[in-house]
Length: 129
Image (tube, rainbow, N blue to C red; front, side, top):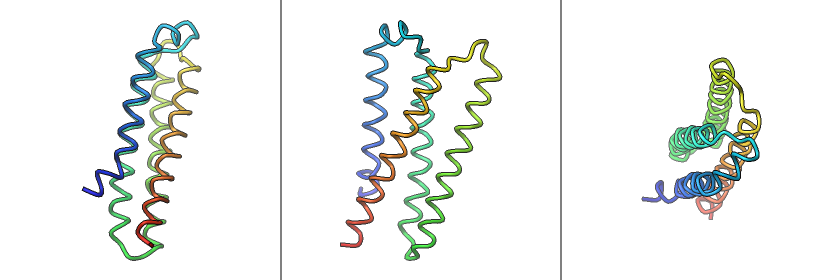
């Protein structure tokens, strides 16, 4: 159950970002955003966050701090590479690349990463206490 509690902030972030995009859909379209790019980007980043969460769960079971750091960097690099690959595939396949939506998805990525690191730090403090 503890593992599920740790992942809840990412679930809430996914739901909040998705709801905000849907609620402010008209306004976002007026400013040039592509709603489908934002929603798919949010879903993709949530999926990556889940994969990263699985890496972190495996890392927390080990007693070695070096192994924990190794899993953290593996998760970070996997996310970074997959985001870059998806962005390149989108750029190659889209008729017109919506740069504003790509930048918004980059901000989503930063928020997911910040949330993940803060949850890991909080979990590490509780484990050490």
